[in-house]
Image 1 (cartoon, rainbow, N blue to C red):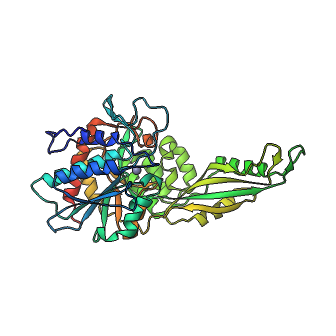
Image 2: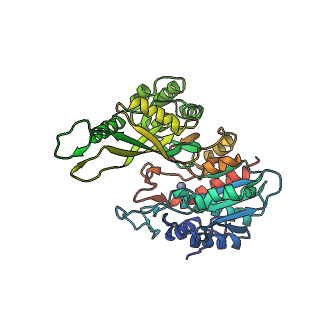
Image 3: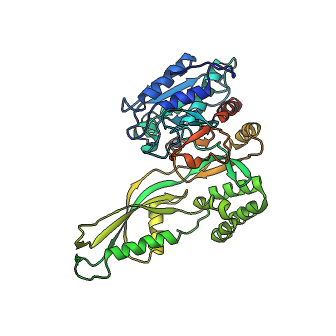
Length: 443
Ligand SMILES: [Zn+2]
């Protein structure tokens, strides 16, 4: 394991640190995060940071740490997960766990989601601990297991079993945000302040069944086809939430122009279908912020090739805007789908609790303005979900702010995809920017 000390402002080379992290195969399942977290624990301890592990599963622990502050601000939590989604079997130009550098980028599963962010957190923490001036308040660290598959031994366990670890914490920095978002020629620095809730809804349809030699109509297969065709061609209704209004107005303010005007009209109540269509590709970015989605991802109920089934089902991956509910989506589906179906919630993730607290945005804007001029910070709603949903139960607002300057060719679309990579020259400036924000935090 390389452990080169860098001349760049401290006893840690953040690029080499990230390469070390990428070489741990923490594909989840099974995760097997222990070796990676023990490596980080040793690295933090060497910098004089006190750390401890909390686990319900010894192979899947969580690493916590604390840097003492001057007692002049509340504690600030920095957290991230070290598990990654599986790399898949093909499509990689450079192997997913070799941490190769090519074409100015560091390649590997987790480069963006989110070992890149973990490297920023750990490097910033080491520099903070080794620096001459302690931070205003305590800086707390949490590096967790299993974010990608439910967080049960990870953040969920910590929040449910050890909430006292974060007494007094109101704000946290983590994924997902701080990475450049390009909209045509313009760029933004989105900072996640809210996210959608996931659930799985099973839709079951019925029809005539029997011997496959009988020329039947009105079958379950026909009803399933109608249901799927409807979901493919029509959308669940648009719904303007308070968070989406904040996001649209901030982006409109930051970008101006035709896009800004269109977004402002939507925030003012204009029909998103019309406005987004007129905005083309840039408009499509905002679609998930304005409606719930229900996407078919699995189906079943077939019996045998010579039996016409009387009942078939499809499972829908559903993402729900803040303030909505799985039951609300079922009501929307009943309105939209022209065939009768039975809907059942098979799985539900918790939603973020409480209203978004935007009070840290000015501080993050100032930190980002020096880091990447011309890419203003805007609040953002994530269409996916993160460990922020568990921390929100403790009244902790997460800001997605782990700053990485990305060119138009490297997007967050590479997360969970082949060829995930991060520009090498984005990493050290990202550490500086994060450190600037942490040092400026006063509560
Ligand atoms: Zn992630």
